[in-house]
Image (cartoon, rainbow, N blue to C red; front, side, top):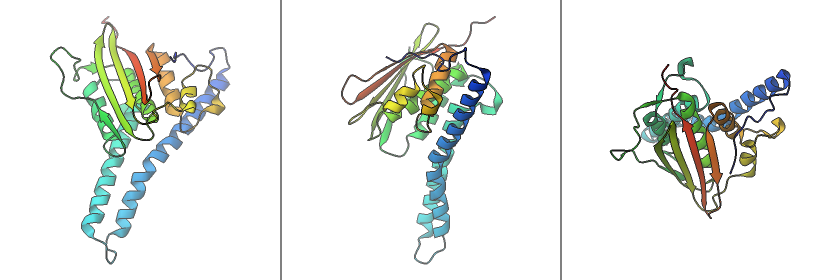
Length: 239
């Protein structure tokens, strides 16, 4: 079980907190550039091939189109997970979070199992939810993906709980395990120098969970399975 609290001691100086926040921003930029580089390179390759002798224009255009679509989906996912859409905190529906997650998994060796069809008494996917809770859910999806680097499936189940939502993210695959550096970034005593572009998203999840008062538990006792349980807060009661 991993307990989420603010990783930085509140008694530390403001200068130290500012330095950590600056490092986190720099690492997020590195992470985004790394993940977006692949589709950008593919688009550029398709453009360079277009018109070359022996190159099939239809295949080149197909490569450009597929890579451009992949790039757009990644940008949309990261914008929601790590930023504020339009600088606001308007409510976000689970249906939108699911759509963004589906875009993340539309290529590669990891598949997403998040059924769209819901039972009559199940969670309402179209109801607005707190934006912070939805960002945390997206960050936890990235954490779960780290557990199945060799390929597998991520199963997502969301249900209503008093005062909020209960989310279960089960990452299944051969040798599924949460990397030590990612698990370390979730702990309250992680040192700034131990944060990297490979685990900064886990640190973001920990910070969000602490700020929201969310309860997170991570289990990985079963072979080939890492499970994340999250209790996400609902909207504040009306004034």
